[in-house]
Amino acid sequence: MSGLTSVVVAGILPADTFNIAALIAVFVLISLGLHFTFGLLDIVNLAHGEFILIGAYTAFELQESTGSVVLGMVAAPFVAAVVGVAVERGILRFLYDRPLDTLLATFGVALVLRQIVQLIYTANPRTVDDPIGGSFVLAGMNVPLWRMTLVIASIVLVALVALLLDRTKFGLYARATVRNPTLAETMGIRTASMRTRLFAIGSGLAGLAGALIAPIATLNPSFGSLFLVNSFLVVILGGRGSLAGLVSAAVVLGGSLAVLQFWISTVYAQIIVLVIAIVGVRLRPIITARLAARREGRITYEVSRTTTRDL
Image 1 (spheres, rainbow, N blue to C red):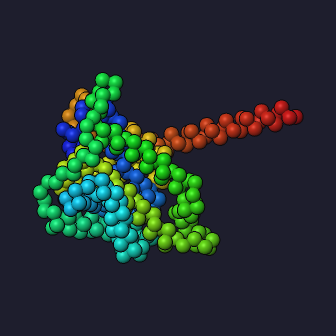
Image 2 (image 1 turned 60 degrees about the horizontal axis):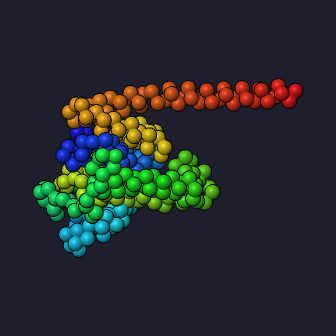
Image 3 (image 1 turned 180 degrees about the horizontal axis):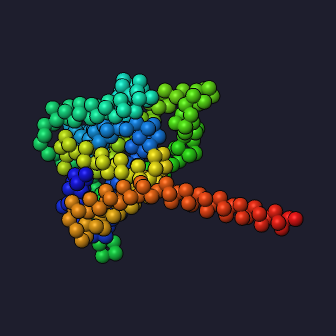
């Protein structure tokens, strides 16, 4: 778990207040793809980090072959999505009713993808150029433009995902497939195709995250696995299937990690963040139940007042 910090924070993100927003953006980006594959499809996707890895190396490869890192970033989500479709159609579609088998399968996929990357690019560190470069001063802080781009990208992507899932026919069909696939099939929804699309979107978002984070990191075949634990922590703490919960969890965990590093070492900061996540997972159902009970009591009180007034 300390890998995320060592790659993205130590010596890369500046130790100033803007680091809080930048690290929260990183936590959001690495977790959005898992929101689809784990949060919605209920697949314990241990290959999530490798889809991030695919996106990062796609950006690197096109940077080297065409000289355009922007082209690599545009292509990254599509390459990762194609690999995701192959994995879902070839392996996972037969395992949706066997959660333990999906865990083992995605673990195997992760090992294979990581070894393929190592065979092609070796274990030597690689770097991806900053497409923008430069910085500006904001409230006395020196803010690199690309890190500000990460913050903006995370906001835009969350808005687009929310729009897709809540305001479109695809989102309606996706929710029906996730909640009651049998009933969804009776209504004419092709649940197998819908699952493939959801996994492809999750894989593509992971690939995009890898490409966007690559300019502030050093690439190697273990790059993706460094983000795996933190992305699971965000999705689990926020509540599987809850996009608002994901953002809230990213703010809590990413913000806590950034703030703690002002005073203590990275290792201790990560330990505390892990404790925060564990406590949060334990307390979230209790808090949610109490809020629901309070809301229900308020509604009952309002109905009672209205009824009494009418009488």
